[in-house]
Image 1 (cartoon, rainbow, N blue to C red):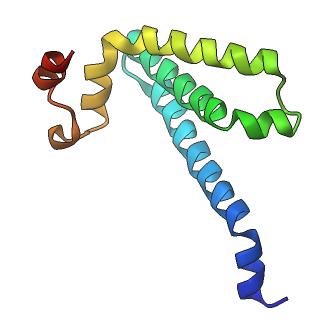
Image 2 (cartoon, rainbow, N blue to C red):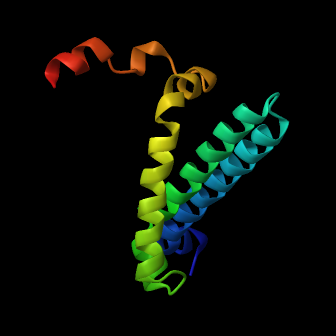
Image 3 (cartoon, rainbow, N blue to C red):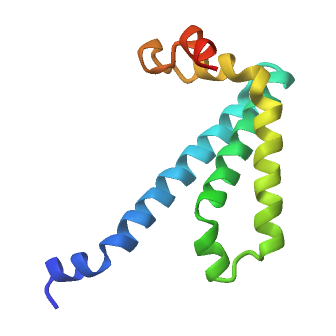
Length: 118
């Protein structure tokens, strides 16, 4: 088979592999950033953000992990519970994290409008 057809046949796997590689690099940088944080409190918040990132990625792809036998249903449920717990833990630090990642205000929801719609 020629190279074009080989890529076409495998493109779903290639895209998944590329995403997994980028996610691994991002997690490594989060772990390194947490280790270099100037205070234990910031280190903890960054560590929790890294754990949330990793576990939410696993949760997103849990079907594949279950089908492939890498995790069992009990573990998948435990991951979902842990993701919720980490979200609750990080809730009070959301502004700090958003500011730290340099997310522009133009892409953030207008909190006054969000409060009015509830």
